[in-house]
Length: 261
Image 1: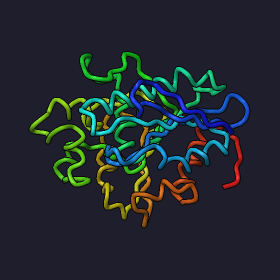
Image 2: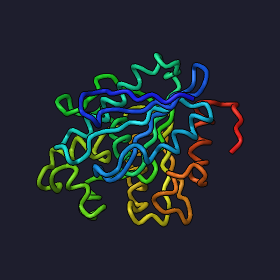
Image 3: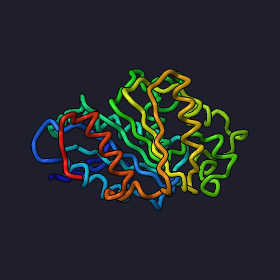
Image 4: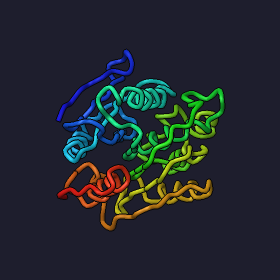
């Protein structure tokens, strides 16, 4: 396995790390880390997951981005640039980007949901993608996918307000182009939401509301609620929810492959 750091911009946090299995034509997985958009949290919290997936034959692009110590819409623009960079440069590393998935956890789930809704943004919105980028699979674990509701619920001690620079009534134009619940999702093969019913950081109603939104748009989407799980089990490759996500990736991107779990 190889690990390669690449910068998609000039800022120190505009980079990502490739975790590349031996051989060519590995399917492509993008990881977007969480942390309520706070600068203390970085992509290293996804290192164990990236190593585990690479060991099972997936090429992983784990992305870093500027957080709310930089003004809106910096975070979103960084994630858009990181996703685009990975898709463009995957073939240079022998990666088969025609088989691709994106996974996000917590605030990273919000950003992954936003990144897969960019084509439907208004033409003048920051980060709009003129060509819809489809993924075979989108897996969101405990996503902060409903920003306006999250603001009113004071999730993360006001993390949503800090991220967007105000409450919904203060900066409605930002919520309108940042909140996945307000956006038209791009086409995709499958969208899977995973959420622990004991999660007190991001309550399960966030996923339930986003599931309804996806289905209202006629998209294939499902929610699996994990009994007893809190917010952080997904960061442990040995957890049941990580095994579930891994199985979804294998079934979708490597059908017929068999791995020891």
